[in-house]
Image 1: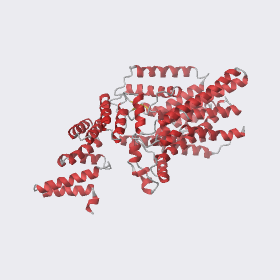
Image 2: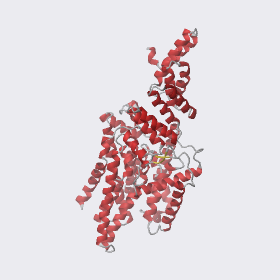
Image 3: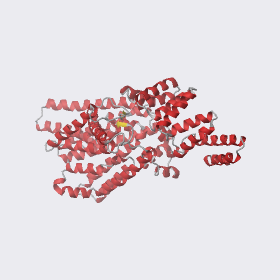
Length: 567
């Protein structure tokens, strides 16, 4: 048994790593990877300039300095080769699988439902149900989601050290280590905010500490965790606001938020049980009608399932604990503070589904115990164990196949469109990929299909870009103008239309657009060059028509935009 106890964590690590091997062949994607890595030299390395940027940036609405440091280490070790970044994600996730095993083992012991050899196998099963589930693919196979796996590492360490701090012989350092790990997790991703409430759920079951010390003591005990959560949440909200990513309450009011919340809370347990039809993006509808069956059914199901688990809490407290934990971990993401264009994301299950993995381990432990007591026929017990093996085989096979779907942008978005032909963003992203591959005609068709489904300023701007590539400049101009009518501050459209006017020698029309873009985001590629050139050319025109003072003012402005021209 001692040999198995030492070998099992290594086996879990290897199995979790192997299940994601297709991800090693993956490339950087046009799904945030292009902004975070390909067009972002600031993270490349661990020098003082890079560290200062990492600890101050809120790029794309996230404050994640430890995640950036891990990515900076990747660059220091292997440059921009995507292989190394994928390897880092896989190693972190395989480590998390082992940590889930150790957490599950302690919780199963606390629940009193597993001992001896059955404990190891049951906890190992829980670890693998977490580690090789297809819902993990988005977090592991997508370089941008390094924040998920690194955050998961510190989150699990925070839980494990908290459990260790409850031992009779534990020193105070265990609790301090838990709080420190929680703080580190926050610096990787803000999704860990509900951890203090999750620990209170553990206190209720399976630890059963409420009977011994009472709720007041338990809440007071968690005050340091709540303090970390409060500080981290404020920073996260500021970061999201800077990114302008919060979903508009005018469009999605309280009733819509309720429907979105119910949908999200039901979505992830269902996908844990039946992980089919997974997609890189489940698009948020333009309008959420709580009375439509798509949303009304989850609202009803949420009430029924919650009521059932509350009614039978004395007989199955583990079910209520796993359900409550999942809901608590999802609440900041699926409704009240919703941000982004998604109704759901597979990656949101990375932390929220941990309770279901432990619940699966508990189910296997119950089979072991029933077989040992003789209350379960040996044949049924054997069938159950074989079924557990088939479950793992099925999960691992699905994960292997799905990890290959994240290989490159065209594969990813072709798959997404196949899963949901009505996903406008998926079509837009597929069109961008086709554009980069020189397939302008196919890209134009995909952009138009996307606009037919959902009118978006960015998609119209992208259509203008592919029309410009084809030399259809008048049509491109109309699309850029249409994008700016929808969103006057859309920097990409400002830059593109300004650049088009500049190429046509229409510098007077180009300047207001390029100046507005420069005010919004001066670091956009090509912007300084285009604005500086337009200022100089317009200045030259004014000088020729006898307006030297205005010409000199434009030249001085050009030097401010491009100081290097003065040397």
